[in-house]
Amino acid sequence: MTRAKVRIVDGDDAGIEKELPETGQCVIGRRSSCDLVLRIDSVSREHCRIEAKDGAYWLYDNGSSNGTLLNGLRIEKAKLVHGDVITLDKITLEYLEDSDVHASREMIREFVVQKRPEQEQTYTTNNSLIGKTLKHYKVLSVVGEGGMALVYKARDERNGQIVALKVLKRGETVDQENLQRFLKEFKTGSKLNHPNIMQVYEIGEVEGTYFIAMEYINGSSLQEILDEKGRLSQEGTFKIGIQVAKALEFAFSQRIIHRDIKPENILISREGEVKITDLGLAKELKKYVSINITKTGEGIGTLHYMSPEQVESTRDVDQRADIYSLGATLYECLCGQPPFDEVGVWKFVEAINEKPPPNLNDRVPNLHPAVWPVIQRALAKRPEERQQTPSELRQDLERLLDLVVQARSKSPAG
Image 1 (tube, one colour):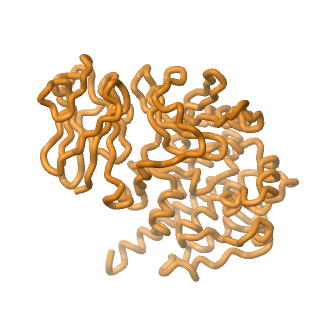
Image 2: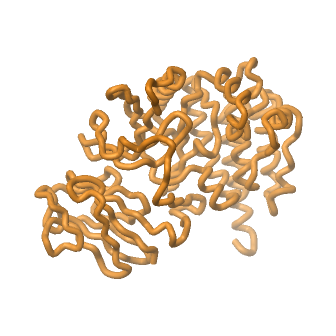
Image 3: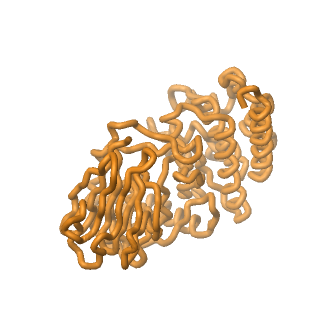
């Protein structure tokens, strides 16, 4: 049984933690006999309980007056996962599993892993927003950091919904180039309402601090999953790829190209839903590429997935650049490494432009014979030799998934 605890996030008792028993239950409420006592009148006497059951912890509402919310949704019963946010009216609790007991665990679908972060993370920017309110969003904790922004977990005080707040970093002044990209990310994201694209709610500014409120995904990035598992099964790879292709298909129908598809920008929820994020490059590709590949050490993560025409900052790109990037991502999912992994920016660029990607059949044991031709086509140097639309690639991946499933069902082990 994994050791776990709940921690009070806000209020007078913020920081108090309660270890959960390996058997039995932990009752939470304002009654003095509760295992975790919350000193606030709006919490019911025995508001909710957490029970150890079947090797996991389950949250139950005890018929409370104001309800028990899990990640913003009112529940009667739910299985808890590390990082879950429990809201009891005006009190917020966070469910945390011991990071020393198993580094990660598989979630509902075989390719989804909830990677547990270190409990004491240090970020390069002062986490001074924790506990403060931006507009109507109460900032709860830091969940990630990028080059130009920090991402916080926050609660919408109007309805209790848990959201992700992407907050633009700033020093004495706000970097105007980053601000323009930030505004463009919101403008682009607000146009795209699709199950496989992270939903963008609103943009705001409070005393010079700019933020975007977005859908909160309780899960892992594909990069974290690959870091943990090394590589994925063929079936898991195609399930992810199909959902990403659907997102690109919808974006393309709205005349929007992502231009930065990579494992880091693909999120997978604990329910197995795949969503793409980070739309900040959708309209500024040439400028971004020319800046990053001329700065030592920058842009390498993106270069792993860049098409030849995208590396060339003087040439236009279209939806086929996204197809290449998704092909490179799926290549890495299948074998555990990207198509090219050269040392040095310009050697990398040369490989992308000139070298054929290594044959997946040489890197993946028992690869279905239909797989490599599809991935190889997506990685073609010339855009006109690739699948021409996300729809075409999605159809190829759906066909591969059917073939792999059929082959498994016919095998002696299946």
